[in-house]
Image (cartoon, rainbow over all chains, first blue to last red; front, side):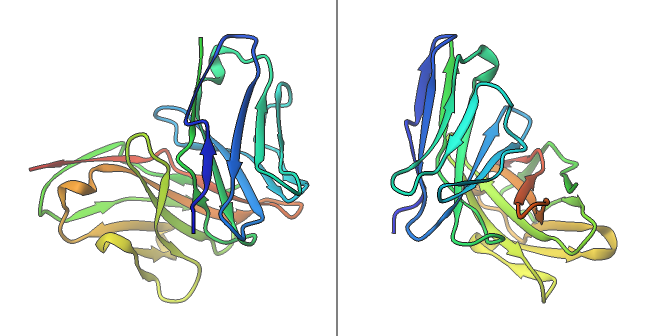
Length: 113
Length: 116
């Protein structure tokens, strides 16, 4: 059973470009979470999605950031018009049910030049 | 809102020595508690979890943790550390956060170095 798959592993974007981060949850998992990790700061919650629904986006900046988890296909975290401050590691996690342990992917490391 | 404090940013121990990593949480009700480990450039791996029942929880790789409600703590222990345990360790609390949501809130992590 494959784990949580994130791609790309590394992504370099120039300021003003768009970044698209993909996450395929574990088989049978319909709950997806996105977290951002900055050095020395641990992981910060961004958004919680269930198939086709955003359950909680309280941790996501109001502008430039969006997330989706369509009925078919991976979850996508989209960052428009990236700025240097968006440089970070972005982790996706999935669980089979609400309240269960989260299983994490290996992350996408975004660098904005 | 829930929060997690890991007081030690960096700990160094000798191989074969015992280990205790501290974690304190703040949450109004009975929390779900977790310890994760992260190796450089990797994602987080679940070591163990506490939902209810026995307050001493056994995990993978020889780790255990004890939930102490009176101290709001969930400290991670290992009796004999191996060089491969060098990594960063994160404590997390899982809790309802309103409107049907559920979140894991993480501490800032403790980086463990192991001296041969």
